[in-house]
Length: 497
Image 1: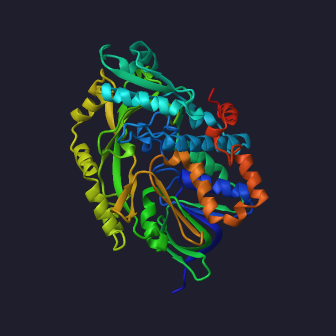
Image 2 (image 1 turned 180 degrees about the vertical axis):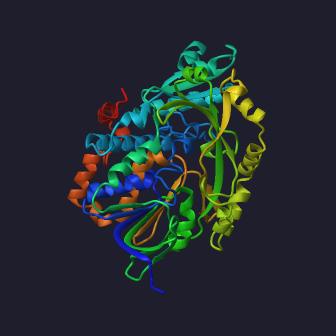
Image 3 (image 1 turned 135 degrees about the vertical axis):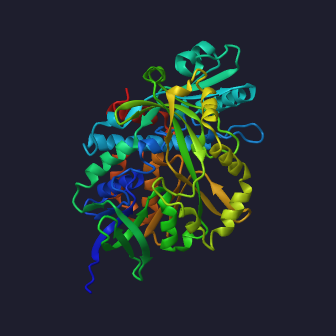
């Protein structure tokens, strides 16, 4: 019997056709136009999992309104460090997107990004005190200088009429608003980016292709075994560099790659659901993203928000997400994903992280047991006049929170994104969830910095980075004039006026 396995060679293999792979592919092509790239995606279209508009929050995560990025310390102080870092990263993403639009590599920015106020809203004495402190801690920084704060009922009603309708004026409430917030359709953006990337010479995209095995060879290159799910044909791909950006599918592939740096990592899957409004009159009343405080033990993706969105050219109004537990690692995954991911090297971290996160487990059980009436009750905390007949349940995305080894605790549950890179820089894997897509450009610059160390130092690459990202190498929060200039420029190019 003859060997019908197809063989291919490329400089780079990207696994997963989401925002991360699209971003990395485009940046590498800008830096080195003759680089060859093969992209493998298990599903039949790009951005069908975590990057899809229904599967993520669509908030240009810039830390303007997300309260979980500004935790309150035991002494009552607010640490703005994480919020500043995320806001910086989002400005980097905006610059890169603006560059792509200016270079006509991506078209019609109005289809993937829109300006919309980002509002934080709280009630009750303790929460109002927290938001007051948060406002002071953030507004002192140039990135957040435009933030407004109010406890005035009439003012808050102007900001978010739907949220204030039906509330008592005597209720203790507070809000902050950033008028320059954005709504981003990451699915649309990803497909737009791949549309350009896959037309370039030396780039091949394979849909319905599942990576089954990865093995590093003696010369440090990688051999990847892939199955075409449509025909059953086998393929072997040979490459010098592999990036795994497969959302919840990244962890099983990291385990298959068997690199020392990947030992001890586990994953904890969290599913999600939205309440979607079906009443056009209600949808028309809300024109902002309003974020509140998460319940005790809730993962960051479950921070409640009442959210005006543009999805596929249509205005939507969503509330949630409601978290749940599923053993799948992907929305289109298998129920055996979690059990199969448990290995000898990660069982202790996973068990210890589970013991340390009893509040999260309790929270997820409560969420799973919620009735439709419970969900409407949660919605009414944000929209007091909500009628159950105007809202339907919609399935959201699946996220896998990272569990890693910890010397003190045995295992630790991480709620951010984690980049794992082999010591020789030939393999890089992205795990985790929030803030994810919004900070994709900064994350991919980090990947390139780890995996192309020598090239990064060359004047040619440095010049190209500065063309793509004018603020490259500088902190915008420390350069108010540059920040002003960069924001004005990206707002104009991306039509955010």
